[in-house]
Length: 74
Image 1 (cartoon, rainbow, N blue to C red):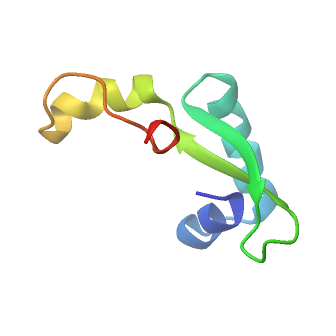
Image 2: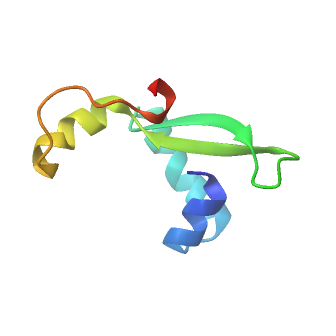
């Protein structure tokens, strides 16, 4: 998910969303990568939930205990 998509879904201003995401990246909850923006002309910050977080919540979501594949691993 890109920063722009997060803003669209959650509603805060772009700078507020960025300030919220930065600590989550620093703590290892989110993984940040740079990728092409939706227009394909520039770069956009893209985020995914860290695999360790997905593992921790998998039992709560009814998933079998074990490591789930992330988008980067597929």
